[in-house]
Amino acid sequence: MRRMNMSTSQPGAEIGYTWSIRVYYEDTDAGGIVFYANYLKFFERARTEWLRACGVDQSRLADETGAIFIVRSTALDYRAPARLDDVVKIVSRIERLGRASVDFAQEAWREGTLLATGSIRVGCVDRGALRPAAIPPPVLAALRRGPGMGNAGLSTDNA
Image (cartoon, rainbow, N blue to C red; front, side):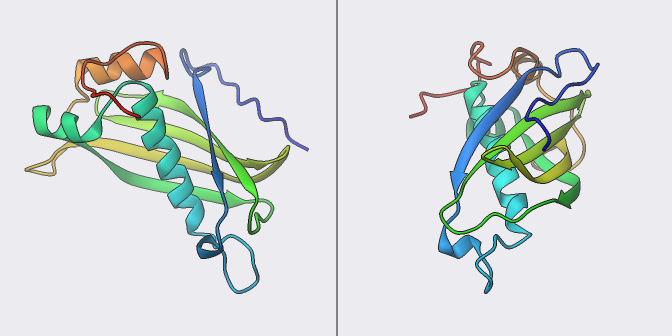
């Protein structure tokens, strides 16, 4: 069994985020197992919650700077099934933080069992032109600090 600790030599990569989701009937296939594509949704939600925990409000970011994040590429590996009513923990960390993109490593766990792993590259683009754009400096700083470590200056009060 693989441990949930994801380590790397990348500076700042030890900053990770864990977010839990319960598996609902709508997440499963006819066999009662989580449909494979839903892991992409789970990983997306975890990255969104990570940004929120870092103090980044994506709507406000887009309105104030025109910057939005889009998924550029994904690679997933499935190890074990999740089933109806399971609580799945999504563990996310930054593998590489570039000027206009972020590479995430994400894992889905159920009670110590690794279910799926993913490598996701997210790019920052200008909302109007849909062309690559530099990640705004306050957002870069927030990602380097990690969740709960201060406000990026681009957030609102989130409940």
